[in-house]
Length: 433
Ligand code: NDP
Image (cartoon, rainbow, N blue to C red; front, side, top):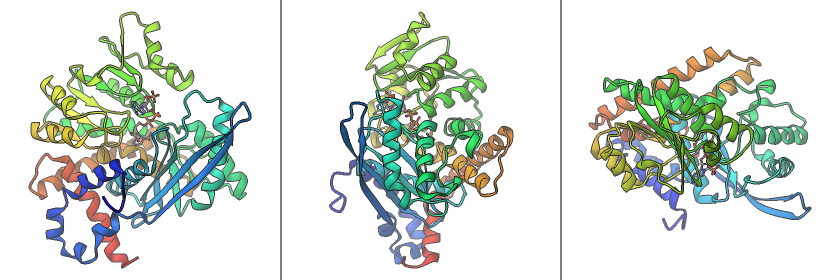
């Protein structure tokens, strides 16, 4: 705490992992001998930089940019860029720390990193977004590369922003180095299924948790918070699996639609027109919009938080359990507070923590890197099959690790321990670096 003052989200993420590791250190004394805990909590490199840009009124604006290269024991740093006004070092470090273990769980050769800016894309013109992205990349380019550090999207960074950043990278470096960014457009090096991957992957993970309890999505009522990339494709896959999503949200409020959310409309409003979710009710008179409402008060069988960190607190978790929720799959990163996690674990519902449940996005980014490296592009079916296999493997690894360590059904322990052990072994093997 003294070493990283004020970084509350980072403290929360570290505490959650360390709380699971006692039995691992007993089983592997070499990890303590090599000071793995102390080393893994310290990023290998942290870059903070000025991002000057000009708005449409020719006024100079200054934002702060970050890239935290946390751990490269398993491969090049890999993790998204977040553009949101709440971004500061503590957020980027929590996300980067989580990313180390998530990437380890995928079984693919990727280290952990994260970056972003306190820039607020909301209400900005397309030209302003482009100028910001170009300025951001004008500093970032010197730190990244297909063998070094490979950023992707996150909150506020989608295909449009990746395009502007890639264009600037190419211009500055004079290299058509596709593997330097993932989440690219399909015509210029992107992978099919990357857009859908985090949402689809989270649903595959929950499907496995349900299967382990003799259940399925069929006929289940679901609540998915957010209405961005992760929420949209989570909803799509749930509907394909026979479940019904009755609510979604943005940071202003939620929509409840008993008949089931009209996903085409949400995509039109959010992905194309970039409007607010409240406008949904202009098209469906039988839907309800609740400004600043609590989406977790809606009774459901399955909850999939897909907006942001700490969106489910202890009381929300109690309400979900009381209303009969049997499974929670985290599409967002760390969306449940420690009190909420305790409630889910005590109630013994199927609870899939983010570093396992939402690993499908980064896994498919790693598949994009594979395709770029061999100048190839795979079909949708093949790529989705790979994603499905990866999510099944992550589920099984977490499930079996939880059993091995005497906490059956506890996917938090399973994910933290399995993710950690692989990285720790690689760090021991590579010596004191
Ligand atoms: P988007 O920017 O596409 O969508 C984010 C959604 O969450 C929007 O509906 C947004 O509403 C809402 N939201 C964001 N911040 C807040 C907030 N502070 N309070 C309430 N609602 C908020 O982002 P993604 O869908 O990509 O990301 C969502 C979550 O999933 C994040 O936690 C991200 O880290 C995680 N994730 C994403 C991956 C990906 O591949 N994209 C991979 C793994 C994890 P509004 O428009 O009002 O801001």
